[in-house]
Length: 525
Image (cartoon, rainbow, N blue to C red; front, side, top):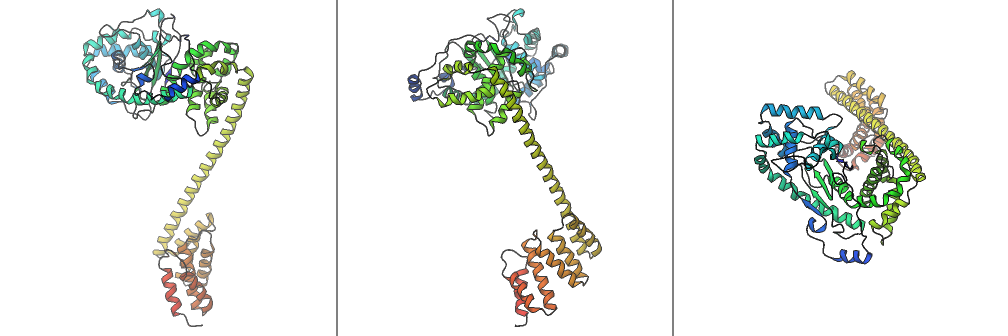
């Protein structure tokens, strides 16, 4: 599962991706208790500054992108019903316009994977006017770098919108958007309640900013894009099969909404450690957005560590290794420090962030780097042990399958009176499994059929003594040994074996009944 969360400053301070320095007023313990005693609000809108809207600009840009040939879909997912319908309709556009759309897409997709492409075009949609104009609402010089790469696409969107009446198509898919918006409300309600409870702050603590959730149903599944425009945080989630399956990504964005001002306010104390950026950028799975962005590493470390603290996993150390290797080098320290926060019920998260940052030192991060390397080595050893056990288990299964095949073939050979063939196969079984009770039992049958009763007795005895013998093999081996002994006049020992079989419990394939009959026929002692 992949999602993109870019938080970069635009060229103008008033434009896209601005992280504002806002005062965050911590709730007192008394105020918090008062809030928690109240009945929880029934809607997300009452709980926090969140609104849910479908946006025709996002729809139109993504429709044009699909017409241009963008066909990426999340692994093991099918395109949403809305996307399939839109892709079918946009093909009806004039071939020349489709050709220009495709040419634009091919020319401007350089240096961007499919996920970043979607993020750039969605961001463009947020920076254009409503239809039918679709003009840029800001100057090109103020566009973020990735959006600047696709600027001009809005002109093709305008042409497509007019040519095939995208407004009609927009109305046709409204049912899908209505259902998606309804599905997201309880998910947000739950994650906001959980987050505010962990932060120990009341709802509506931030009144001058808002979150706008815009479902985007004609792009890749489960992808969550996020952009900040002045005081508005836009969260644009893609289609999902089940409400809540992208909950972690949504909570990630809500945490940014709460924490970005705090990080901006108190993060200056960490700038003296900017040389640690080299540690982050040298990690094997670091994201390209972290390049030369120290405070982004700090913010992402805190956000993802909070999610780990709020939603514990079976092995948090393994998760911390993964976070560190993604370049989130402050996560181990934050994870430990947040345990202290959780223990102090008088603290609120807004008040604790300054203390949290004050505890960071270069020495701590360097020590965590060494500890992570040691943990990773231990996990690698465990994985190798696990893989070796799996390989051995597979070999055992293959061996058991081969032995079972040989036994079945030997059984059929006995039935066909092909005794030498049966003996060869059974001896092959014993070469690989010297204590195989079934092989000894069938060899005894072969010897018995060939009138070699003494050898048969010895083989039945081996089958009965085997640790792998089933109750049926035990019973029938004893029964046939008893019959051989009786035929030799050794009635005392025969009676012992017959009695053992007669007293056995369970399903014995008729052996118990035959032993009881044989006992009645033996001469009295």
